[in-house]
Image (cartoon, rainbow, N blue to C red; front, side, top):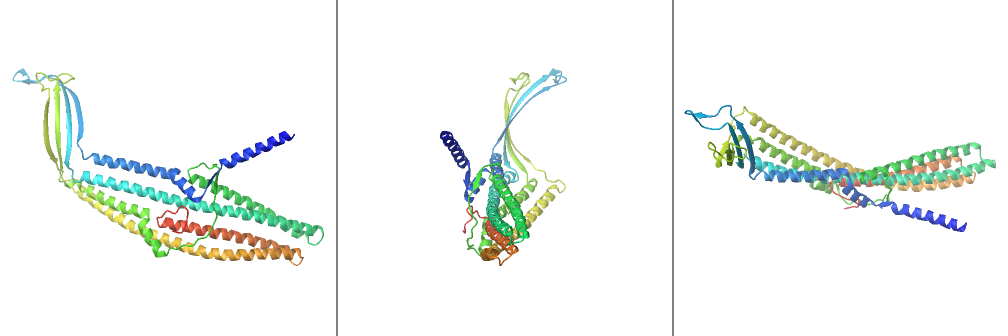
Length: 435
C-alpha cells in the first residue's frame, strides 16, 4: 500500500512538473519581441519589402541592352520570277538575333528606377508602421490582461468577504440575533459575486487568447504573461512629444514618400513629349531549309547596325491632360499629408491629456480604496457588535470592490495611454518605460 501511494505521488509530481515546464512565461518586452518575429502582418510587410527590392533590380536592368531572337518560315504561293527566270524559292527560313540598346527614353528609365527606389523605401516605412501598430496593440492587450487578472483577484477577495459575512449572518440568524432577511441578502450577494467572478475569469481567458493571436501563437497556447500594473511619471512635455512625432512617425514618412512618388509619376506622364532613341544590332541567317544554311537565293548570314528615333509629337492633348492629372494628384497627396500632420498632432495631444487624467484618477482611486477598506472594516466590526446593519456591511464591501476595480482601471488606462502616446510619437517602447 505504501509503495502504491509513493508511486502515485511521484506520478502526480512528474505531471505537475511537466505542466509547469511546458508553460511559457513572457514579460511585456518578450511578448513584443516574439510578436515582431511571428505576427503574420509583419511577415507580409517584409515580403512586400523583398518584392520591392526585386523591382529596383528589374528597373536597373532596363538600362542595359535587350537580346531577342526571331525564327520564322514563309511559304510562297508562286516561285518568284525576274525576266522569266527564277529569282527565289518557295520555302524560306529566317533566323534573326537582335540586340537593342535604349539611348534616350524621355527620362522614362531613369525616373522609373528612382520611383522603384522610393517604393522600396516606402515598403521599409510600411514595416516600421506595421511594427509600431503591433507593438501598441500587444501592449494594450497585455495591460488589459493584467487589469482583468487584478479584477479576478478582486472578485475572488470579494467572494471570500461575502461568504464570511454570510457565515456571520447565518450564525446570528440561527441564535435569533438577526432576522432571516440578513442571511438572504448575504446569499444573494454571494451568488452575484460568483457570477461576477466567472465573468472576470472569462474576460481574462479571452484576453489571453487574443494576446496569443497577436504573437502568432495558437489561441490554446499555454502561455503565462508576467507583469503588474504600475505607475511611473511621464517626463515629456507636450512640445517634446509633438516634436518627436514629426521626426519619427512612419505614417508621416510614408505620406511624404507618396508625394515624391506622385512627382515621379508626373515626370513619367510627360515622357511622350520626348523622342525615343535607341540603337540596334541585327544578325540574320536565311536559307531554304530549317537549318538556314543559305542557298542560291539566300545569303547564309549578314548583319546590320542602326540608330533610330521614334517621336509621337501629336496625340490630341492626351499627354497634356495626363500630365495635368498627375500634377493634380501631387497636389492632392500634399493636402492629405498636411491633414495627416494635423491628425498626428491631435493623437499626441489626446494621449497626453489621457495620461494626465489617468494620473489624477490613480491618486484619487488610491485614497478612495484606503477609505473603502477602513469603511468595510468598521462596518463589519459594528455588525458583529450588534450596532450596525447587514446592509451597511454589504454596501461597504461593494464599495471596496468598486474602489479596487477603479484603481486597476486607472492604472491600466494610464499605461495604455502611455503606450498610445509613444505610438503617436512613432517611437518604440517595448518595456513601456519612461524615455
